[in-house]
Picture (spheres, rainbow, N blue to C red):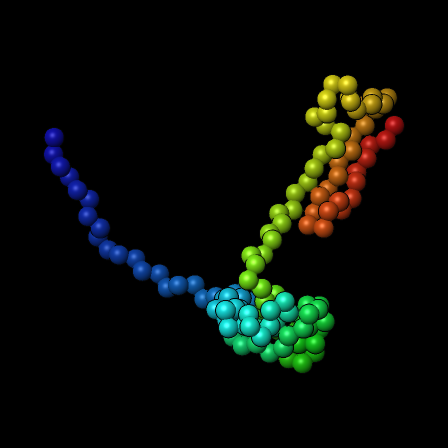
Length: 132
């Protein structure tokens, strides 16, 4: 048996992808967060060009005010807090399926009644029902 080792002929070095403005502003927010806590705790701050340009307790009012001042450009608006953010993952749920045997879906002439509720980040978004 021979010991053949494959050696690399050349090395490929790719440049790092350029970050979008929104990603740069988000990273600036994360970098500035420890400095912002004493003065802005519990408030939303708007980050533009890597610096805080305004703050408010109402994030929507802040966004409107900043866009009126600097135009509709990418900014980051974040809540200054030392608690981690709650991440919600949208999903759907099917109602009327997988019930216990004594709670079967009623049968209609065109098949079982199905209720499908669509769950989104704000809760029940809508219901689709097939009625008899």
